Structure formats: C-alpha cells, structure tokens
Amino acid sequence: MTASYSNGKSAPADRHSAGPFDVSEVTDVSPYLDFGSMRVPPREGLQMRLDVEEGSKRVVAVTLEWNGSSVQLQAFAAPKSEGIWHEIRSAMQQSITTQGGQAEERIGSLGPELLARIPLMDEAGNAAGFRIARFIGVDGPKWFLRGVVGGAAINDPMAAADIDDLFRSVIVARGDIPMPPKDLLPLNMPGGTVAPPRSL
Image (tube, helix red, strand yellow):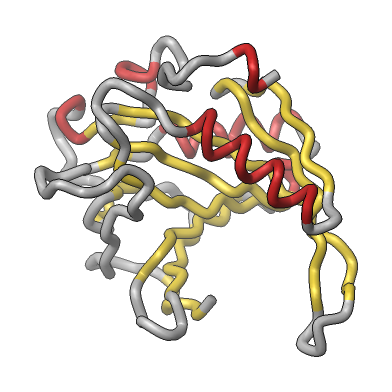
C-alpha cells in the first residue's frame, strides 16, 4: 500500500478545519492545556500524563487516557512542502517485522495507519508476549503528529472514533526555530491538572 503514495502529505482533506490544527488556524487557545509544542483541550474524564526519557529527564510524549483507551502523542518537525508519515510508517513496519512482530497497513479515518503486534522482552531479554498497538499520523504545515493508540480503540470502532476525534482536537505549535525533519518538537509541563511524569 505504501508504494501507492508519493512524498505528499498524509492528512484528511478537512484537516485545516477539523484538525489536528496548526496553532495559526485557531483563534482562541486559552481553554487548551499548553504543553509547549502541543495544546490539548480539557474534557471531563480525560486524564493526561507526561512521558519522560529516563536519562535526559526530557518530556518526550503526552499520553491521553479516555474511556478505556489511550493515545500517546508526539509532534515532530517536518519539511514545509513534503510529509514524513509515509516514510516513517514504512520504516516502522520494517522494524517491527524485523523484531519478529507483525504490522499491517490499513486505511483509517485519518488516512493510512499501522496495526501492529509488537514483541515484548522481559528484563533478562527473553520473549514476554506481544503488545497490540495502532499507529496513526497526520502531516501538517512543517510538522507531523503521531499517535500510538492502545486499549479499546484498537478494535472497537466506536472507541476508535472517539480517540480519532480526540487526536484531531490537538493543536501543534511548531515555532520558528529551525529544526531538522523528524526531530521531536519540545514539550514541557503545563499548568493545570496533569498526572506526574512517567519515566520511559
């Protein structure tokens, strides 16, 4: 399926009006929780958690938990005229397969996505089963937003629609600092109620 795509951006046709949004496309960001490069609207029952890289203590992802599902969000720098989701998706699929897992490409409400069965290892390096995850992504203006979906939204269509809607409500603030494509956009601790950071 990947071969049928060029370097063009992978995004829903209505991205600019239905999200995920660029910060320039939103007139009022005051209700949103500000994580730096990402803004997330509060919802009743929505839990948020920061994922922190153990060595550097850098915040590397924001995980949202909603009605039995979760989505881990990361935003990356991207070229202005080209998308990077097609390339990243292909590399992920190859990597998962090389590790002994499975990754099936399919079309979801946001466009191409991966449904993956990822091998797990215990502390001794022995096989410890598999984790099922759904990888979604959207190319925006000079950025790429990726979500790793877990829980009910992997197989339940209604739960998946809720998580996709949550993903589309996110605002990305790319900033003007030059960054190489695929570099992670910086995240920080916002004000408001967020679960304590979790080390990766």
